[in-house]
Length: 117
Ligand code: SF4
Ligand code: SF4
Image 1 (tube, rainbow, N blue to C red):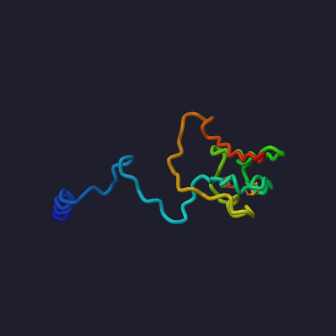
Image 2 (image 1 turned 30 degrees about the vertical axis):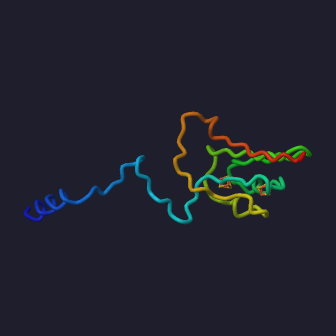
């Protein structure tokens, strides 16, 4: 009992154990895997990333005019298979972690490379 009271008093003088999220954010640790991002100007449209994705979260369309990579965040498992498989080092796993949204449309991202230049 005495120990419990002593602990309770000591906790009164300690700072909080939690952060005031979302006002104070944690540092994302090295190796964290957030959604992949594409440096689309380096992409050849080979389609390997789409083929290796286990959940069909990537579509690649290549024409004479453009290369379009469509990424579906709402399907992605953040496995990083696409990043590891891209022969041109186009894909990087980001450190983004605030991903929730009420609108599913916002979870699709298109990366477009104009090939007519
Ligand atoms: S991280 Fe994995 S699940 Fe997400 S797009 Fe890449 S291969 Fe697909
Ligand atoms: S694997 Fe790389 S180069 Fe090939 S389509 Fe995907 S991002 Fe582009």
